[in-house]
Length: 261
Length: 347
Image 1 (cartoon, rainbow over the protein chains, first blue to last red):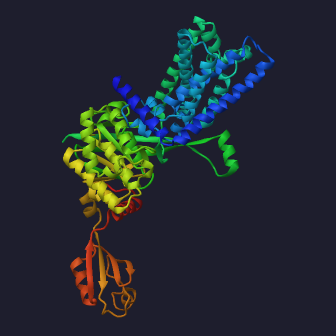
Image 2 (image 1 turned 90 degrees about the vertical axis):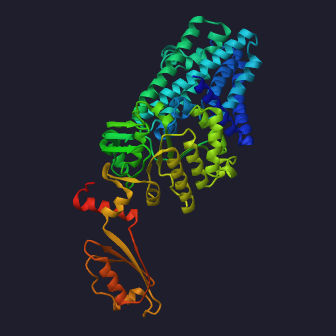
Image 3 (image 1 turned 180 degrees about the vertical axis):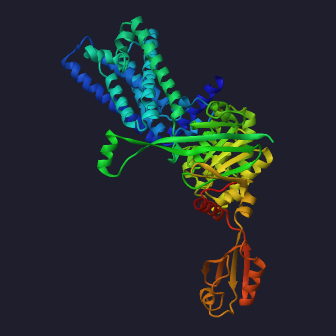
């Protein structure tokens, strides 16, 4: 266990060093993602200036929704940067290097890349929380829990979508659709969804758990919701890991030239 | 004899979708796909002793890389069993990874934007090496592989030869019992190839590292390996010591004759047309003529070498004459030819 922890720390250090190799590119990419998120939030600001309350959601809640979604996605992308690329890595036969090393394959593969734009997302999430969040110790702790659950849900969902590549070969398109769709659904207030759409958001595509965090976890702590969100994160990440493990027996490798960067 | 690895009836088949050409073929494939079982490795038997250096040879698509990937736990076989360093690769992959090293010529384990020393550090964590032991080992390998001048240079700025030396050094960091190399010298120049072979030989000699490699380069096999296993269409065609393979399977020699300047007319082609035997003796074939140099392929089963040389020296003034064994590439070509004509070669 301590060996795996030391390996993870070394891997993150190497990723950071690799990302910082091009300092200007690092700051530009991270900065541009920050600006991109800010523009989205500005549109919401204009919307709420005209309709101050929508299904019980106010501008402060939407800001926290963005803080949780971008922040959760950000830390997951920084520490486990390959999670959106699982399908590509599997279908193009790039798992060989990870399979030849004595570390858990999924963990090794996920941690071998750091997303620079993810750093921008994470910084954006923190700054928005500092601006609109509850800065008491309790508020900070709940925000940290929300970030953790959001990040684990992102990784779990993409591990499931990406592992499909073991069965259907070129799953890059599907994984990309799931990725884009899932992110989009996490940045809209869950209050606007009704009926079957809401059921789907809290079961098949668990974006609703991320979207409802500002209300159910941070504004009015609901133990039932917190437990459900925790279980969803655990179930989706466990299913992703299991599916990936089972899928490894079907891995077909490939002959593409690959470099680690 | 202690075995480093053993495979019994090891096989791998892939299910491949077959599509006819054009848009119509694509549409047909969409609604009624046709699948075909492709045998990549056809139930091969292998055994390699500890400390042995073995080459797995064959043309593209023969199943070399698939075999190596099954033996390293990367691919799961569809048939058969294998034991590598006492473990079943695909069932005990993690344990096995501590005992083996892998070098894939086309798949780098070095971080592209970072210097090799950073990857070495990460690899030491991957294999959970003792810090002091790692530092000593790294320094030793840096010295032997002559990596000092570019240890701190980003990999993207290294030449292919420098990168491959770093790749191989990285694979030796955890003292593997068995080293698997898949096309380790692909794309390298002669000098770098020779250096890499020398280093691998040295590790084999000093640490009794078993070496199992695939290569298209006959030089890798001739200079590194004591035994060669030739596979074709997924099955083992020949399993022989390298020296025997050349001597036994090919009873031919290459005789190169350079005519003396005094010979007239100047070119060997004209000389052969005017004065040499017509036709050539049985078992002798004219392989090539370049200027005054003539290369003959001689089948010793049909021609006596002494008689041939005597006839040659009587027929013309000779400036130089060499008799050589055929290259391993020629030998392998010959084996494939035998399989085509006879429907198989028994080892």
